[in-house]
Length: 428
Image 1 (cartoon, rainbow, N blue to C red):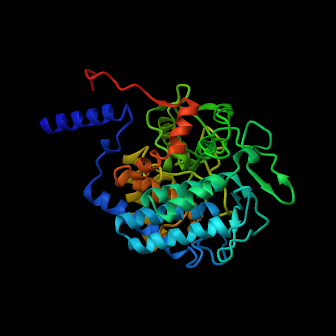
Image 2 (spheres, rainbow, N blue to C red):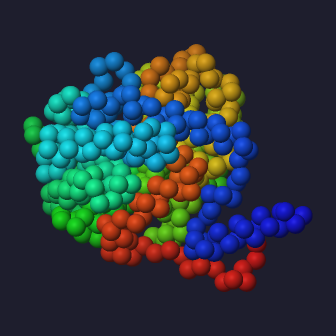
Image 3 (cartoon, rainbow, N blue to C red):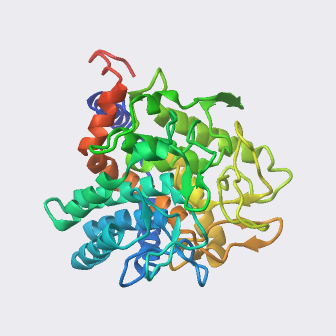
């Protein structure tokens, strides 16, 4: 009884001291589960060590032979290498040298337009491939990775280069005279007719744009995007059109939204509810598909039996066909630590032979079609690693990223503030 009381008091202290931010320590995994989660994170790191070009550091989009690099996967690589070095999983001098080489290529060689990198590039040369677009969201993800890596090496050339890459990005140009940031631009067709104007993974993009010290987007860029609300199985959320779990995760890998209020919305709690709704949605088809169960869930954009699809739950698109993406459940661990840990244990113990390899979990599987992905995707490995790091290592990514001056500027200009701490007499 005393032990339970002490635990409850500890949780209350953490809650108050973080201004109502829920503590990731509220759920305590078993030692063997903590060991497994650390193993998964460490193995996942190897994707970025092994599948980044040894000279340029540019990271392959996929483990498929012949895959080009993607700029977003390269961003996750910058973050992953810094984390790996700090954890002692790779030599610190190796991590630092690889990050520095990558940033030099991004600063001086990789194809870009007004600071926006092309979505897919040649890993050896940095040249644009596949007629891909200069992508705003993918640029935001590589900038975020670079800025995070710089936090691990303050006062070094890494910090200087990461800042220069960020400051070169002309966010106003990519707005194309509108209130929103355009999704992309190509030399052939110019600006896309699509803009970041409704809830999804856009929050990291807009935060960096508004916080820019050189070419900032105006604060109204944050205010204007739509926040559609829907409900599934009692979970009322601001939702993304696809319902894919990654849309509720990518921004949260870097930004600690716990306790931040935006017009009454706490996006951390929103993502928690979205995760629960996604799990409930897949379980509603458990009688039809063998892959869905309380410990086997995760509907998110992934490869599948018919190719890459934007799988997701409700509210939203709700596309499903029995395919499960383990990364989706794992990357929700900061929102649903107990359910995500159970899922990780289930996937590992039951499907290790088919699904787990040198770089952690492969992308997806479908039991009804006896289909198992034979590849890893860089962005899916990246979000898995960063979310596990936040959960397992004292919220390390959040703490470092939230110290950045552009993040502070974004919070100040948009008026996002922590909820007031509860009174000391608050009862559990």
